[in-house]
Length: 311
Length: 293
Image (cartoon, rainbow over all chains, first blue to last red; front, side):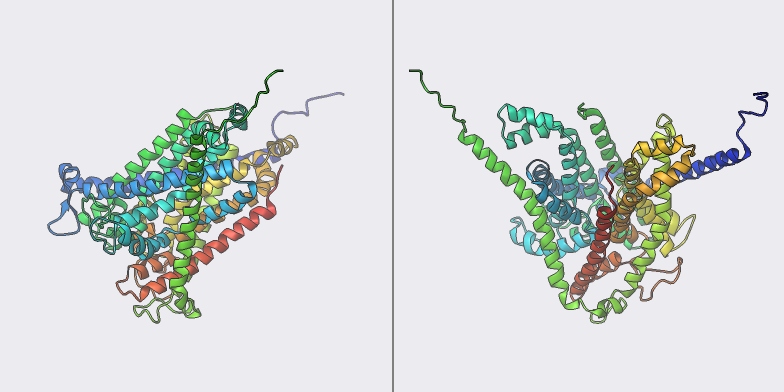
């Protein structure tokens, strides 16, 4: 009751030590988070310098203007269009497979399947998603190309390699990505919307296509864009099944090379540091990185901009 | 008498037809997905069956298909994946704890880190290979084609996934746990250490096992790091030369001799069995320790 002088608002030495340790831990954790940024910075740094060196030797007009891509031959040619179009072919074929099939699977899992069926089918799709790309490459080269593409493709002769086989199998590879991301988007559509439509006399198919689909559209488009980025960047399937002959062709039954496929192919060859072959890896890598980055930004934008927020 | 009105559901033929089309479309989706998986597995098992013997895992890679095996690739994969886990798990989980528990959302640098993790997860794996080739294998670090080079590159590759899944697991721990702990006078880190982490651990483990198993199947970045060479010895240290299962499979597939095909298929079976086992462990952990609050 007498004096309050002994009370102080300063933390005790023990508390101060605890708070000091607290700051230390926070700093350590923050530095770990910074490492992720470091990885991005390093990627950009790694790509930019040699790519600039490359464009010191090869004019931008040759790079974007030509249609012959033979950077590892003599005389070398650097028309990136043939491998750019090769990537587009593979991505387009893959999406032709993965969009309808992936959406079909997503509608089934989200709107039609009973919980029991769902608990069986979903893990199997997860297994498909976990198959390594080298295994898909083997499947394309060893099964799809000789047994399906070579027998069924009507135009021209199909050799050991074909863009078609690589594209189709890449489509199977990204199918689970489309299915599971689209399903996530569909499941998060509130039930009240469905019940409203049922009350108005809609059946299950009408609810799926006219209520759930538009409500989940932003998530579905984002899923497709992400899957497209994965298809464009797919390397191992392209190297193993599409072949290594870069050519601009309208017939996907022929062999062809993609951007990622070229990077992998040239990387195996262990190019001498500083050679034009070595630098061309970085030029193509920078182009590939830019394309996938743009696709990813588009997908993030779509989700932010068009997301319907309920409740 | 009043007329009896029949309330019959009107079902135009076009509606039924559309229903059938839609059902076909859905079953085609599921059917082709599951059918492809089944075909792939059957193809690999049938093709690889003659080589699925103990010799496969006991023999070293060889230019002669009759005696070639994958022993050094199995040990190489173990070395690379364990090193990758040792590097990427503490870093990724630490980053996740920072972003979930310590970072203030209104600071630009924290939003930058978040956006960056999201972007990095979408970068094609071969681009990580280019980075590794320029800076780690050659260039500033100059580590050559070693286990450590591969592990560093794969760590960067799986890091965003580890961060994302760990954050989800941490977020699932209810806030009341944190508030209770803070109310009793614990500091933030003490709360994280004794309340959040123990409760989030099963989720973190499940997610990280799955992301590390991705490193086990990855081939594209390693192609860029000079892993596609003939290695007939097991790694003994971080600076050993190495080969890994996916790369050895790649090498057998792309070999001109057709006799290597069954060997590639048999090696794929081994790789898939290991991956499925890891998946099973992850699912087991999830089911055993899953908590609902």
